[in-house]
Length: 429
Image (cartoon, rainbow, N blue to C red; front, side):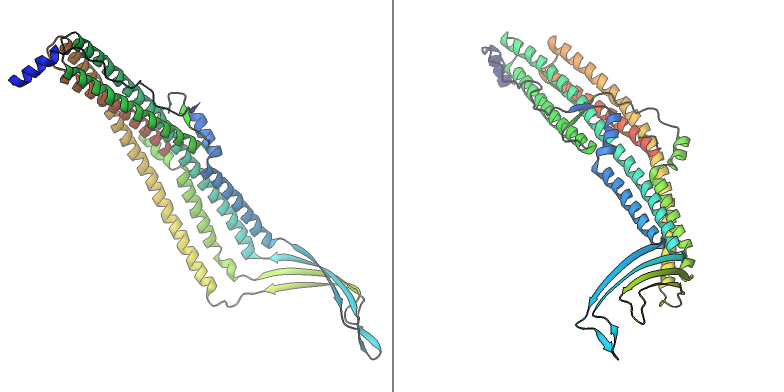
């Protein structure tokens, strides 16, 4: 104890030292992000995001497939032309039965008259198109939700930076006071060094927070579909949340539930067309031709008409296997729809509980931040009056910084939970 007191007295008697180097506040480089509102961010993401663009292109592909299938029961018209040159004419009994040069042309019109399987395929293709459109709407919801989370992440990180900068500024003021005390022969070098260390630690946190902000802004720009960072330009107002009963009812209209229902209907529709595999199909064929020169068996011009009836009799069990496969797929789609509806309602209940807990946590965190700030003020007063040491002030500064940071993180968690609830209840976007 005597040695400690002696060392403290010697430190107090030392001449004032130069202030340690302190990094400039807010000196971390940051990529300037263009400001954008939450509404504009979601709108642009839905028009530029590559995942959504791919889903829209997939709709176009399915539309093209539907057109291809529809063409299978439409009339077809083809033309053929054949020029033939033999080594010599074929002569029999002094008469030319096959000339050396001949030209043949024909037009072939095929008209499907009764084609149940092709009609069924076209109807099924239409169902697939509707199911793909519903799936695209679910992709749209997911992209909007991801955009909202990214936007809220940028907004929260800016608030964390404010906390860190405020803590660094508080630490600087404490350092200035400790330095003045030491320079005046009242304080100790230990107090000054401790205060300078806290300034350096808080400044490092500021730099790290700016780095995190830059990453968050880049992530927002990427999901929106722009080449560069994006910054928030407003306090994101997410709107009111529905009641639990209304939310559970709205969940049945969510895009993922509708997509599952469309896929079930499409699978059941395919299954209902099993009988068409056993039906005959009828087509008509009309052919007109020109032959130059004409022959005894083929005149110079003419036409022929045909009706072709095809009756499938035996195919090795292929149709029965296809019927069982369609039945299994229809059952899978039904099970999938039921599971998706249960999952949607579970999401709503979980989102309500998460929001309630997040709001309670936010209230407690803000109370803790307020009390920590009061404790810091009291510690500064006691230190100024000489009733406490520098350690209590530094501990109070760190506790206040941590409490305020936790309060902002709790606020972000509450906003994120509200966004999840709105999405789960089909109220966002």
